[in-house]
Image (cartoon, rainbow, N blue to C red; front, side):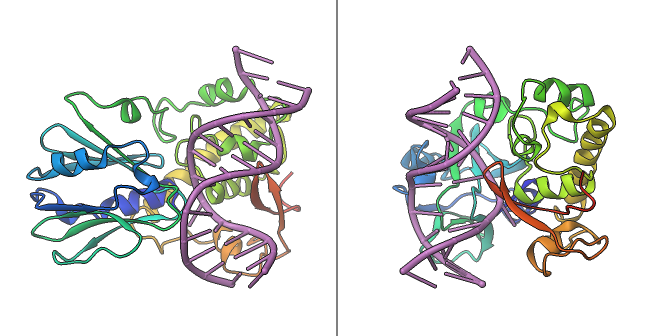
Length: 264
DNA sequence: GTAAATGTTCGGGC
DNA sequence: AGCCCGAACATTTA
């Protein structure tokens, strides 16, 4: 489900547990989301500790606990976080539930493409420290974008936007939104973009991500007005600008929606 | 019953 | 070497 703004929204759902002591951890340790983690070690290490802070970086979430604990959560395709009552009974797809007096931090993931990461160390683990620059950081300059994409000669820009090592947090709908707002067809290659196109791509990427964080990051329902987003999912697939039908085709391995009239 | 879903990783071809 | 594509992963929903 989630891209950078939704990830930020879900991260905040565990805020009621800030400062709370962990009383119990219930988990489905054999599930795929624990494929890189010793789930039993995680459960025993968490007990008695307190949630101290949390952050997101693209689609990666990181929860800090006392005792030098780093808990990473990636929501994959269908994951979500909830906060439930202290006496909540985890359901079928609630693979991780961390109980405090105030309530339970729950990670639900039906399709199991999500991931739980765990480390106990003074310094940040590689899965948190080795991430590429955030899109809205100062390091994400136009030159950085050019340097990162220059090698790519034949891949469609849609596929490039989905590359998490360059655009952390951009997923299928944000990529379509960026390309629609930048008026660039998803099947263009980076090598044939003009200087103006590159400027537009860079600037629109930053703006769309920032606006998504500002709106959806606070409230999942708050989709900015006039975005492609609504037409992509709910409406009859009409371009919000002139109400003509959008094209849908698989580009970069994913269904892409774009307007053949405004995107060149 | 079939297809598709807001993600990532793997392997093969080039 | 490294780019690019398609398949695989597991489950629900239309």
